[in-house]
Image 1 (cartoon, helix red, strand yellow):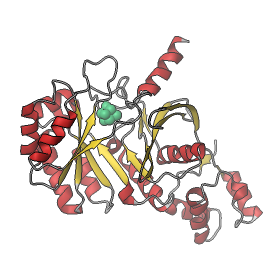
Image 2 (cartoon, rainbow, N blue to C red):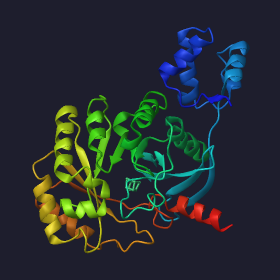
Image 3 (cartoon, helix red, strand yellow):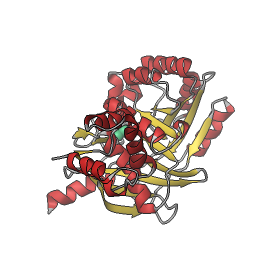
Length: 343
Ligand code: SF4
């Protein structure tokens, strides 16, 4: 089986051209064809001679995944894509429309090992990591389907991105220098993998880092997010501070409000104590409810926001998108597997 050329970074493009006896600049041209021009066929690479195109075709293939199903929310236009990968696995990507442009939430793993209690993606654990090509392909496929350009990326779909570190960093660099998406328009959300946060601080990237916080209390957070037993709240906050000191990039904390779990008045006090005075930003979200858990969306979002702001915390209420579709990450994929089993 020939290797897929989609997903090669600039150095790999230059090296593969050198390996087939071509000049280095041909590698840069190839990179432009693959990403800037979203070229889907070697035959369209018109500044390459027919012999060079032939050589590329003999050595590589240029393939993409397939959108298997699209769900659309009639209310806000959010679309969820179920994408089939080369090995029959499924992932999801979600397109959201904002005033500042089209934003795509991408997956980084097939399944997830993190075990967050409110999440459908972790049921069944992680099957495998996605390659940079498979993460990039979510952008390619959504753009092709919708005939638009994606301007923002949130790395917040299925999987824990910092557990698939090298492929995710490669993805970010190609999305930025190849697809032309500004680094500041790329957000990466982690459940708090401390070594990954430390490594990310050294990458010299201007991306936005978001931490899934969900409780200001270590014991409650550990119950909700088992990974916190390994990376507890106190060392996590220290790693976040070090990240800010090194990069100057403000961190966003994600907080999904869950009825009677993290929406109490003492949770407000806990958040103020944890975040006040630091270069932080709290993103309040309505919980996307998942079957098989007892966690319910809280009705105190507005109150929570007002109280926190009164006490000096920077808060945004994230608009909940895709209410009509299986909005929480992993739900559509999970259903597809259940359908397959019951056939
Ligand atoms: S919320 Fe994210 S990190 Fe947690 S289990 Fe789900 S996909 Fe994994």
